[in-house]
Length: 280
Ligand SMILES: [Zn+2]
Image (cartoon, rainbow, N blue to C red; front, side, top):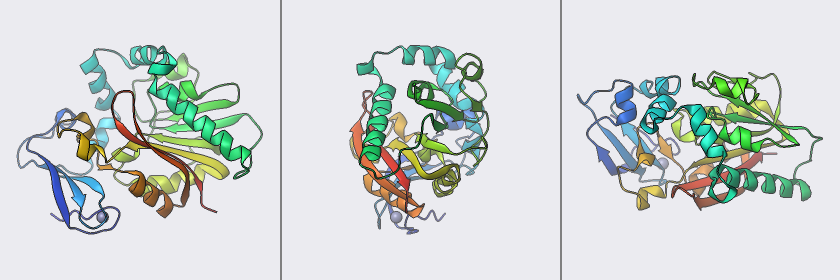
């Protein structure tokens, strides 16, 4: 079965990891072991790290509406709200989200100060796509910033009712909120998308010339530093970017990365963070 590279279309690749049985996410959407395969490969031409698999491409999509967070929550025996309460209570030095928020706001402030883009009048609006757990949206809000969320997951009523954060329980499409945003964030989203280019192009419709895009993804560096059964290689992850391939796809979709950074998170994940604006 040909599985050309998303970035360069080459079909030539080297297999890095290979799996013979459905993982827990695939099992949750009833993928069986019959004729099963799943592999993580590296493109021989451009180096892009991505997965190829036997299951029908759309199968994993259904997990985001129903089983994804439930399945996670069941393993931890906690509800989404309990997880939210626990994580937002973490002190600054233990919170990945607080660090992320800090980096984004500092970088945005610097870009405004340098006059690279014009600082609009507050209040500012931030749309978090896929952030139904609400931790990032909640931590991002302050005197100047107001958060919004769009996420298809159905188990997060506490976000609207208790946190009063506007949330649309649907897959993302432009203009769901009928407004432009000063910041759009995709935190651990692109690696799940069957068509990341189409998502990146469509978020531009919810931005104006002075808006920022924040993207954070697992770093493909993990392919060299983590064992094959690490959760980062689970079946919900279709691709992994690094600084070079993330910069490339952002550029192809009309963005310019102003600041891009490789980090090791507090929970020992390798990640790439990028703050971008629309190319002008
Ligand atoms: Zn390639």
